[in-house]
Picture (cartoon, rainbow, N blue to C red):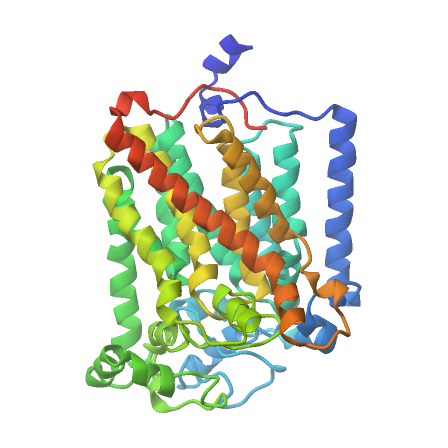
Length: 486
């Protein structure tokens, strides 16, 4: 067995411990049950069987379909009409109710254009098919690195395709699937750089993931200090920035791409006065009325500042700040929630001081997973579909089996992360008064697992740095033995 694996270069991608494989009949049963659930979930998109999983779906029902999607093709149609991409509710509108467009301006052109000439219902279902396909691609990237007929492979496919956040994402038509694929490519790229012989493939995946995130939902910006600090990922990070910055500038300075532009002095004014930006450019405080600055393409970036500390106390908001506010009945300090990402960025800078290549890349991977989850601890407006971003974290934790010294901790983290795939406690509290206790219970099985996994991964990264400082690199290398992830 060992000889066969040694002669198969692909096996070097697999984790260091022997796989936990299921007997063939049990694997088929588990795969069949998972597939049946996914089919039932997809049917529920049309027939509403699972509308009781969240407050919005329970109260809005089928009216929630495409709520976050229709603004994307509408943005492209706005551009053709000489209007701002972000003037979601302006001009001629043939779409149902929709949320404000906030993705990168290029996303409307590259993706929204393909759906803009279809009527609302066909365009929504076409986008659902695309989103589901992207989730399949993400799951395949991770599951293909697991042993056939292993429980890890089943867990990855079930999490990506059958989790409650995935269902919520498909109902609303949110473009979150692009971010999920982007994060998967980034994490798998770092993983391949650490453990595979073909570094070119890892670089290509890393670059592709960075570009996909930057031109959709720029969560990858939080990872850039880490990727620039690590020698093996630095080239991909600089290349991504070399594409991202000029393209973004084009969407600011070219009139046909930014029809209702403001000037650079206005943009600089908002950037240098965050308190004013939070007041004037907050879509909720403005009652969903857009002012001129909110029609300029710079709002894609300025809105992150405008909404970063706004506590939108909706039932389906699952952020740590809103959770603690509702639990304590008081407004907690904003700076408290900046500590976690700040700690992550500080630890990112330390990656350059780790000499051993495998240790350095394993450290970078652990820290990237933590930085991804820090969004749930620091940003105030977090909807349920956004927890699909935790699915790549679950997959990578499964792949790291046998490769890390903290194996017991890794196993616990897998179990805790898996909780995020399950329904929130709302299903047990339907009809209950929405008081502080009820809201805290609804949110706890989203906020607490995400917070626990994020903080634990940061602690693991810190302990790895401590070991680097206390011992020579040769004494702390991660175990790297070619075998198969279970």
